[in-house]
Amino acid sequence: MDTYRAEPLRRAAEDFDYDAVIAGAGAVGLACAAEISFFARVLVVETHERAGCGASSRNSEVLHAGLYYPINSMKAKCCVEGRRMIEHWASDGHIPLRNTGKFVVATEFSELDSLYALHETAQTLGVKTQLLDLREFNRLEPNVRAVAALWSPETSVFDSHALLRLQSARIQANGGDILFNANVEGVDVNRRGWSISVNDGAEQSSISARAFVNCAGLYADSLAEKCGVDVAALKLTQHWSKGNYYRAAGLPSSIVTHLIYPAPPKHAHTLGIHTVLDLQGELKFGPTSEYLKERNEDYSQPKRCPDSVREAVARYLPRANECEFVPDMSGIRAKLQGEQDDFRDFVILSTELGNSDGQIHLLGIDSPGLTASPAIGKHVAEIVKSILN
Image (cartoon, rainbow, N blue to C red):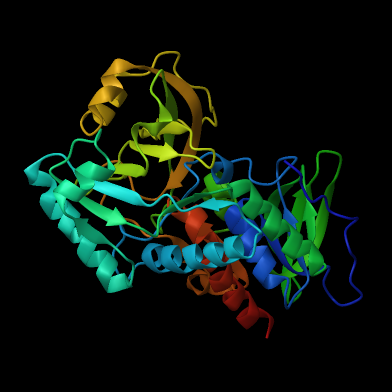
């Protein structure tokens, strides 16, 4: 993909090199920088050679409508707002988007309560859903087995790379900088602001700023610790959860015409293994969910698809038993919710830090972080604006 390389670092005549420095050029980091760049001088520091090398480009590329999260949660609010922002950019021709719609299906009567709860949440949030007549559902998706189906017409798939390019272009159009192949090593107090230690592999330099925003994704909790945040005491240690996607060799993409999701079990840490139709109409299944015992950013996949994956898909798509599941890609999410924990929301840590005013740390930005990213960016920009004023 094309990337927006930074020009040489812009040295300001004022007291600080930048008003704000952002660590991480994933979807969330770029969204924060894009919104901040409208009123302040901003620098994004990214470890890799291009934007979005982590979770931002290793996902289903589903634009979520906003069905799954508690009504007053940041995940729910930012998902709905972020989705509408991306839809607006898509309508302007900036982001390729395909409005597939989605069915959430119950395959057992015991799952009906879960389906009804999603419908009720959606109605409260102003998200369109419909409990579809089963005869109508069978006409639309004759190959899918279900006892009930919830229709989400506002769910789409989109080009996440185009979103990254758009946000990068917004940053640079406003005079912001993006520095690739560099790491933020730590943050120290410097006069009225912060001295941010940046290492680009050749040398280590100190960049001064009035605000620092940690959007380091998988490594956000480690970076927060380097900045003096007691992550363990605040119960903000991130868990790494790996998910694999598979393609079904020999199964025609036309077997379904919409995204199909299973009804989520209560207290689940995943939405289940679902069918995804990409922008080209190709079919894949995923993601699986495995909490990693050790932090190893390894995106390799098993040579053989576990039987449990096929069995999970075959519950609602029986013809999955007719084909071979071939590895497609994998991704890793940073979750605050442990394997046995209840729901955990996004965390944007700022004023709670006491003597660390001017630092903002974003932790546990897992799904629906990609959809929510533009709204998260607006929220963080308001915090930064209050710091600078």
